[in-house]
Image 1 (tube, rainbow, N blue to C red):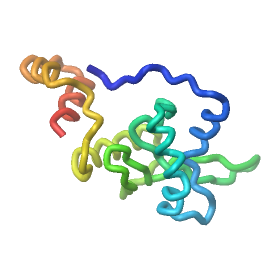
Image 2: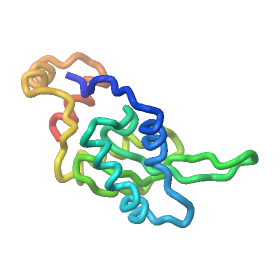
Image 3: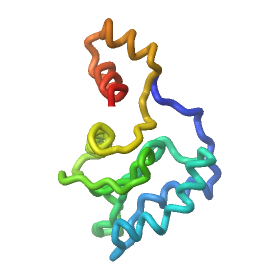
Length: 146
């Protein structure tokens, strides 16, 4: 019922590549970032080598200098894997959970193909007819209806 893939065991090289996908270089535009990582990203997606945080979408990270070095913070730009488009958000991105919210909003409103429905039709009908009062169940029903 819930979206899940088998646990992916990555080599050290694949882990570093996954870690590097979201990084937008200084003076790089979002479209340049997408072009730079696109071929490698498609290969990793096809071979199921993406980490759990990058399974459905990829949020860009830009460097900010702190006293000891650069720290990479998530920004309000992402790549939706369902429609393979850059997604922009008008809101800021101060919290990590914000990204899931703005991708959910994109899937509900602007996405051309929603591949990330979390349940089968039978599970949907069971929950729709007899929904328990749980936030996550309501969220799963809403995703199915997208």
